[in-house]
Amino acid sequence: MLSNRMKKGVERAPHRSLLKGMGYTDEELDRPIIGVVNSKNESIPGHMHLDNIAEAVRAGIRTAGGTPIEVPCIGVCDGTAMNHIGMNYSLPSRELVADSIESMAEANAFDAMVLIPNCDKIVPGMLMAAARVNIPSVVVSGGPMLAGRWKGKDLNLTLVFEAVGAVRAGKMTDEALLELEDHACPGCGSCAGMYTANSMNCLTEALGMGLPGNGTIPAVYGERIRLAKEAGRKVMEILEKGIRPRDIMTYETFENALTVDMALGCSTNSALHLPAIAHEADIVINLDILNEISGRTPDLCKLSPAGPHHMQDLYAAGGVPAVMKELAKKGLLHPDQKTVGGCTIGEIAEQAEVLDENVIRPIDRPYSRTGGIAVLRGNLAPDGAVVKRAAVAPEMMVHRGPARVFESEEEAYEAILSGGIHKKDVIVIRYEGPKGGPGMKEMLSPTAAIAGMSLDKEVALITDGRFSGATRGASIGHVSPEAMAGGPIAAVEEGDIISIDIGKGRLDILIDEDTLKARLEKWKAPKPKVTHGYLGRYARMVTSANTGAVLK
Image (cartoon, rainbow, N blue to C red):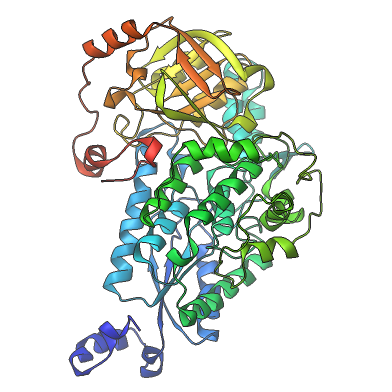
């Protein structure tokens, strides 16, 4: 056991003394030491209940003969961090999560780990750590929030963000907004739609690192607690068998995850996180594979913000296993890939059942023949850009209009709310990429304002930043190279005609090559917005969005 490094032998008497000072017995110290990494905090509704999950995990570990040792992990809520300086820290916090878990796992000589995330960057950060440390590990999340109810209709956080724009446009009263605000988020859990948190929790199942149900069992259900106990038991099984994360997360596993991603219509942030997780497993995921997989994978689900369904509906319809069952019918998955549950992806799919074809469409009757995410290239994004195709209105799949250029999210947001954006405009927000932001801010506020003002079927938005999974409309992010790195987006001028063709995978500025080249030759990088502290270090070390914005 790895834990013998700190507990066996005469020379480890001081170490044992410290452990006994916390109440551990000789019997407990003879057992495998299992790290329980708990990201519980009181700043995120998705994490406020994770102590209950951790308690259940510890019970499962003890039942199976292990000794759990719980350690904490940070977590940032993208919702409360939105549209202020806090958002600069969201994506960078992913690296801190991974680094801190590595530190705790190695320093405490854990034999195995159970990782307890729930929201946005914590899930990929923990998966990155699992791949990096490479000791037997199971991920069990806190589960999704139930949809809110107001006047007989389901609600979610997207509607609150969009309502801000509706109020500014005179389409909603302040009183109605308050009622919406009071009812949209009814309790604990990750926000109720197929946003980033729930996307990554579902993809954890497809990666084989979480048990069936990890992505969809609602946070408030007793089944979530039972799943956590089972996760504690399963980590002891894979420890005994010597199964490690890199045994599970192979290149074929990532292809499975991307396929499920396309079928579910997941957040565009998955295009950042899956390559970053793969990087820690020494696997390279090129963005071009997204279009290849999307081209052969039908979109089977329309969950909010793309459609009317929420995570509780997906759960009731059979969850991720049922989606995989449909995909398997066409041979779209690698069925032999291992999972932490001991069975293969193919066996999970075979045992599943679709219980509601309105929520999970049959493979022969999909919402669309292609997947939910598309990668665009062109002279505006030579290294790629990403759009959630499943959430784009049909009339915006092809669009051409004049550029409205803004040097920050704040400038653009104010222009939108003040009525400064008009039909056909293409909003360009730059210097918000991994280096330029720094931190690649998530821009739900401007996209939601556009939707709330009923402009989402007439206005596009392009940025080297990123979007929330709650975003809908022709919102194209991750433009690479970013403006701060001298990418073509830095050369766009007010009024330039931007051409978007999502079906053909194109994103172009309609100027000749010589003009674009001349503009870029004159370009000078602006002074970095932040040069000190963690963000300053992050800006100096972070790579491009098309490589997952990992640190090097």
